[in-house]
Amino acid sequence: MEIEPAFAVAVIVTVLIFAFLGYETLRSRRNDERIRTTGRPATVVVVSATQTGTWINNNPELALKLKVREEGTAERDLAVEAVVPVQAAALFLPGGVLRVRLDPQNPDTFVFDEPWARPPE
Image (cartoon, rainbow, N blue to C red; front, side, top):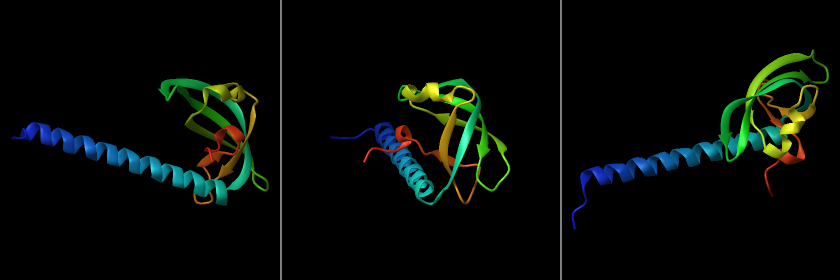
């Protein structure tokens, strides 16, 4: 039984793509967990939220304009794109206040510190 070279290349490329996606997912989850445990607590106030048109696992990606409020620092603006659970979308109306944890290494990076944002145990 002979294997076609094009088939072998397609299989190898597919395996490499899945390995890369798996690695990126794991890296992202570890980074989020690091921020959850070492991040500084803060709140964000939603200034605006618009859908980008992208959906991931039936959850919308939102372009968010936020005001970051951290104790001991001046309020600042932050614009991010984030995928949010469709059940939590109503929390992102203008004026909504959400808890976050700010990355100590990069204060423009954060994770939501809300029950719906925590990974299942």
